Amino acid sequence: MQVVSLSSGSHGNVTLIQSADGALLVDAGLPLKTLLARCAMVGTTATQLRGVVLTHEHGDHTTSITALTRKLQIPLYTMPATKAAISATHVTSFMPLQYGVPVHDTLFTIRVCPVSHDAVAPIAVCVDDGVHRVAVATDLGEWDDDLVHFMQAADLVVIEANHDRERLRLSRYDAQLKLRIASKTGHLDNMQAGAFLAELARDGKQRDAWLAHLSKEANSAELATRTVRNVLAMHQRVNAYRSIQAMPAHTHLVWGPAHQGKQQRLWNDD
Image 1 (cartoon, rainbow, N blue to C red):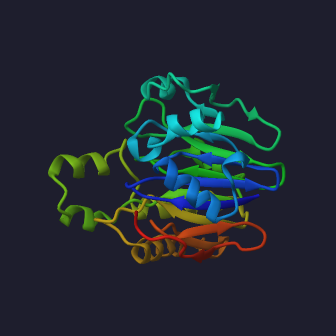
Image 2 (image 1 turned 135 degrees about the horizontal axis):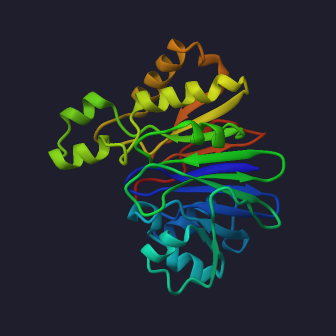
């Protein structure tokens, strides 16, 4: 398994999970042409895409979801309520997801867990190729023990670290948006992300972590990483992670046996 972040943040979210025989997308928050070009840049052609998992219906995750599934004739994996919310009437193949029920194709096993976000049926996703697992939770306002248990099996954990509390307070966002972001159905801040990773590490397993969905207005890669590491240090868990990296907006991250945590700039702003 190789995992590539193609885009992260409010402008668009796409994670590519590759194997030798095909690939799976988690979310499709970029225009179709851009998404396929970025896949090609990291070695995945359109014909190698086996499907797309949709975490929820918000626009920064769904930009090309209908065009992608229709053009490539690939299945959409999501919750039934999410499919209904995006009015995906032209999806060629729909594979409904259920909590606690693994879905298998010939390459991957997909599992999902509910998360707290202001969408109809938002989910965290775990993808398993039989050797490695990646777990992705990019939009949630709080976490609980069920999510910790769900993600503990992963070798790579992708967890939201959306904002710094003080930067959000001082940001140019209007008061209503600030309240939404900071709510229990909004987005995790850096401290919450650190506390989640500390709790996750109680099992003693060595793993890697990516910090996702960073706010351009109320966060930075350096601040998110430093805050999370400080929280882990307070819990005496900082050495539990082989690497902790913030997912940048326009630089891809690659995780896999050959290059865990490697970064390289491949494209400029769209």
